[in-house]
Length: 290
Length: 341
Image 1 (cartoon, chains in turn brown, yellow):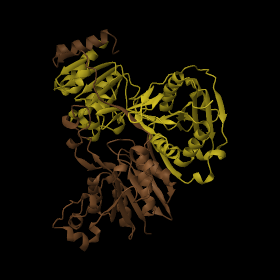
Image 2 (image 1 turned 45 degrees about the horizontal axis):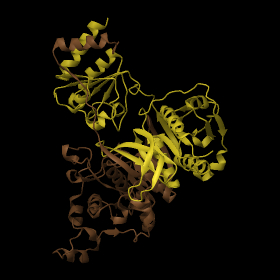
Image 3 (image 1 turned 90 degrees about the vertical axis):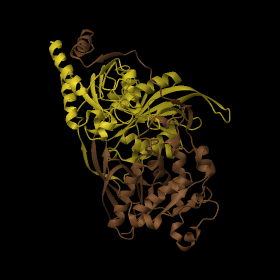
């Protein structure tokens, strides 16, 4: 069987290793200090898609992302690993989207693409940790969903058998295609970039990523059409601007605060026997420990 | 009367999840503040007569029970349609659910269908007013959905001015559960499931399921001994387990220690793990990233053992022991044994 697969992927600031300069003095996030990376869970989703492609020749894998022009890098990262194509949704009207407006944009683009047999995405993105976009896309498209997937065990007779994480355990479910699957952090890590594919696609780009003035490489985009990545605006996907970006977001940020913990008056002790014994005695005397 | 506060109660077999009872307790307070009722929804198989006593005492005015064979184990579509169709009739102003695997599977589908805002993993919920800075429109008595963002480096207050219900998920252990009245008189409505859930919803079949009983009670422990990346290894944690055993406590860990494989994932304390409120928290070799502190800051007495006198966690500690964990912990065990009898 050949399957048409779309992988939803997001370019995110790497919030896992935030240093001291991650926040500006004004208390806002200093995006420039954080490297932009392929959202880790989305990479795991890509790996599941590529495995299905290997087991089912003729299967196509496309990477769909939304973001500023530089998010085209996410599509290239997908191509380097074995994806066949990609789409970048980029438009000022998409900016400021909460999860609901994001899911509207992605669902609209998926309709434009003509749907898919399997839509895969990471369980959640590390910049928001909400895990909402996948299920919200599924609902908008009226699709069945399986979240927190750890492994796609098999796909046959139009049904996928999937092992998924649940609170306190695991379960195995059988779900009919078409299907949206979100992939849990415990799934198989993604393969590295393939050197040949890097050579093939390193100049692949969306029009918005290219410099305005002519460059020495412009002829390549005529010679090798696969280097032209698809870039869509709200109008290109027949989207309703009032449902996109900030305008289409029911949630509003009222306030953002830097976290400041109330410092306590603390007692500093050494690791000497007398200090440690004194601490234990104090805790026992005050019945803090029994 | 409409515009009430709703809580979706998660059910394993016939047992209501603790996180749902925590949210009922919070929901009762919000409903009091707003002068509305607290309603609860329970969906499962063979739950009628079994879940009422686990729900009503938290001050629930009306409980909607959906009881049908296909509703347990949980699958997305039937539970989504229950909430979507019930909410179209009841028009709640607030809906709370656990930030569990189920809540995070269900909440987004319901919000997507009703075009309502949903905020994940809230750490505080309050009622307050809001003025839109662009339109200058004023809104009163909105739900403030307060959550850490950006890897825990900032706290954002989110509101949903226009859309209803205002939906939020909250992790287990963040709110505290408290029975309001064992004999609280709430109305029980047994709903006609077929009216809410079409047959075509039962598409996903659960063919195998393993739930392990929790190996520990970290969330409810009175004493927590937590280790950080500085513990160095799985073996390094052994002494923490010894100390925890002596003190009748539990062992927790920072995200870095869990990621390094020193202890199981379910012992992670912090914004993306368990939130604990012990009487005593002993932080061993934990520097105190914000994301960790978010899960233990409400502990009674905080003891930090760290070679670095300037470790961020020391700021919120009551006692700071400057020294190596592998020296201090055996001494704690020794002097506890010597002095406690």
